[in-house]
Length: 162
Image (tube, rainbow, N blue to C red):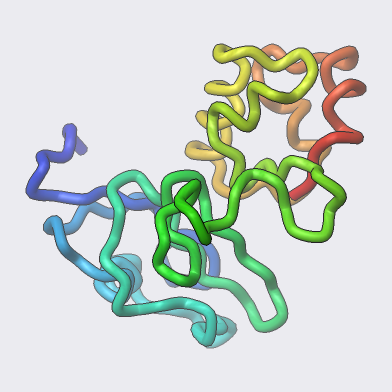
């Protein structure tokens, strides 16, 4: 897998699809095409909140949830309304109803850097972990990020959510 050209988009398809992983498609492709490239959805997929007609954004993560599972937009990816994350009307890094906690699955580099003990290098490592492993499923997974030891984890855990 080489570097995608500007005529392609590369996205990470996860969740209730037959073959989760990274797929590369022609620029202008839609979410539905990414799901097809990932082998289609499983019988447990809930597509009611997935806009299959939305154009893909290079580098985004497309999540296909199970029924009852809530999905928030990954950084740089459009939210359910189609607005790019960080744009007016799009979800930011803090999860709604969490009292200002930073959502590890939606926070961008700048938002992560607002956390205690997190500078640009560690913020990038958190983003890299998320790219490599998919969504954080528990705050405790922060301990798997290189550079986050017990001391930094103790500072971060009360300020973040998934």
